[in-house]
Image (cartoon, rainbow, N blue to C red):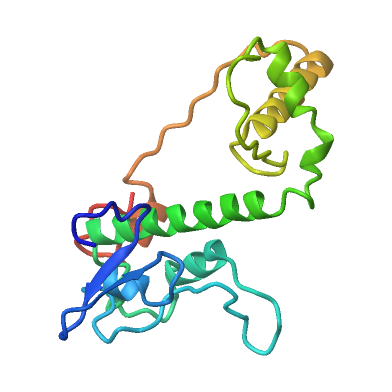
Length: 198
């Protein structure tokens, strides 16, 4: 396994007996194994089908990481996660990648739910002039998938409808921030020595 392509973002653990085990990014031990400094006690991270307390509703990775990275009023500055600077940034990127991976996996495994068969994939393939190339398996992203082609097209059409209704935009407005404003200075006092607050 050491010379094999791990694929994705899996963690490979070597046991004392010499055996190896691959920990997938959706396993509850992925975060404590990947971010050892942030989870010194080995607390569990997000896992598939993690339930909210007292309900049968599953927690999405986006919900889980949004909860984990919130600053709370009663924090006394000892929250290691929020104070870990660059490691915190990597943790946020890792959480985003996990959430995006889970969203894409849902799209892949629920093609019947989003009615992907309604799209004329083969006809589109032939019209595009790719008749000699293999078709492969087509995975359709729903228009609710943020960042997909259909979502971007829908957003563009919405923007053009606004232009058609209101007319062409005539102003380009920017807003600058003054780090000496009182509301910013008051908030920064909670994070002494943090360079990434602003």
